Length: 571
Image (tube, rainbow, N blue to C red; front, side, top):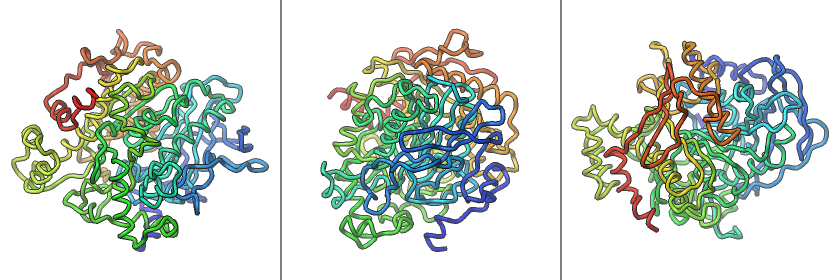
């Protein structure tokens, strides 16, 4: 199938995803809308009037596909976002917008969101809020997962209905992805007033926060109580925003689920754990130009979006196997030329340096992850490839890594390689964010570990079934109450855990402290803030969440050494 067909096809939908099956029948070909039937609601924003929907119980208003910036098409490709042109009359806000162009993800994966329409004209957001007349509601702006390469705000996992019923106004945001959102290239840098390129997707996120500041009051939201939150790449985005001067003053709390990004900037081929330097990003962009046979910014802008998405860099070829996106084995550089860069302008320094110096935007933070972050990551399949990778990547720390993540046979390599990368990409980043905020920030931080295993049926064809434990992203249906997006045998215990999670997160959004909620069952003494000398965490599982202490183990200490944490914090 040609590239354009791959981008626009509606994938066969497997039976477990009942709500996503509706996407194939939707007359607009857009992802499904989850929740109660809705009827009309209207609100006026700076650019015009919107016609949204009201839930059948009149408790939730919903506005979908709201533009927050002009379409980044034509000459606006690879430029900072610009203001939306006002419209006349009433604009419909009852369907999701197209998603950003992106590579295909297996429809059997938990991380496939039912997206089936893609367009560079993708800078839209969605709002769930309370009934007309509600005011001063805390706001949660949520950025989706997908490694900055796939996903969208239309994923039914992020349906904000239940959080809106809990008193929070929810905003989910599309932003430019991959090479259309993060390409650095010398020709693009040359035409920029600041002499930089890349990070356009991060600038989109900043623009969405400006839109929230200027418009959310019309929806009953409080522009002075805005939380930024996200999972995986969305959590990474929160770290980036806290290191971005352009975002200063636009948010007041931070919520990070499984967020990478706290790691040194690499001045060479990239890795999902790390940003790259601008020079390294431009090198990757130049390599892409060679693959496409173009050199100038004008030539780059003539390349169709699907060709940009599908082009393979030589450096992306390797021995790593990705079951979520079947195809040729890849390397850990496959995100290069589509990932954040430390450019000296949008990101003046890496998030790690910002946290370590105390220069990160100082706001209260909830940060944590799940029990099995390795689910969904690529893996190696032979001892030979594993040892070659570890020795070439981890240098003087390689022997420690091979000892701490042992694999004595080919059969042990997939788990060892996944666990090593899960700790490097996710666990060390969230753990270090908590440590550095407690050390250098004046605002408190609370740490969590979500441990509830999804009730995936034994006969399910969902790919993540084989991994076990609380897989990457397992916390989302509980936080959003979006259980209906998956046809799993949810129990009352699942629903109770989700209600407890939403209660704590809603309290944090409202007051910057999860303890302002009614006392959590099983945590009668409250959720203690994290401190390096008291590394408290709440383990979220059924029947009740519990407080425990997450002691830094040998693996985290080895990653401290690899990431030169002592050097960073001593600058």
